[in-house]
Image (cartoon, rainbow, N blue to C red; front, top):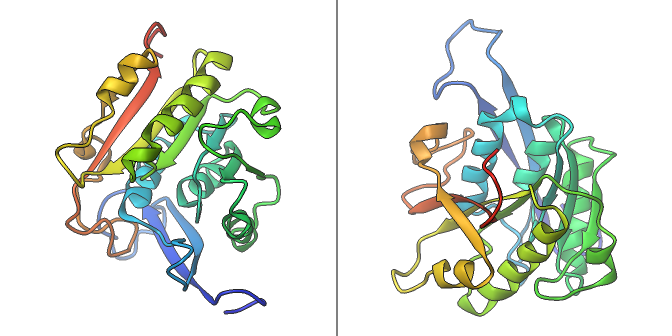
Length: 235
């Protein structure tokens, strides 16, 4: 498909209880999500393995999402945020202000899934912008594969810290792909007075090579953690 910009295609993801469909079982909960992928490498707007794993976590915990105020940062194709919105959360999608094509793709994802109440804003990591300052309260911050380039790590964490100082009980749910044993955010978490909890993939049925009727995450090593203020009480 093409609308005066780079061509794009629609990819379907099906989230369901259990890992295999049972023939004749029409009561099995299922969620279908349509995601547009831009077919141009310069934009990098594809569904990456981390996004499917984080979306699976949201689907697994969908009963706690209705009414939650959720912000996805670095949303790109927005799979986790779209899943959260379709499960009843109040969602805001964000990506870098200087990447209007990414923000357009967030909008396209909402339109494909008939989500009219999702807000889309430009937020650039590491910058205290008017959009960041005017954000309403949030309960959960989402991000998948934002720890891709070590040069961005502190910008991401400083943005999360700013949001958590305004929302002390908020949590940051994030997935990342292990690309180098030398890369770590532990020192930065300590510097910014944050703590993390590792979430085993098997605890939410994500320890598979194929999730949501897709070929992702494949054989990539994906980790998930929940980050909060070091002094915050567990919820």
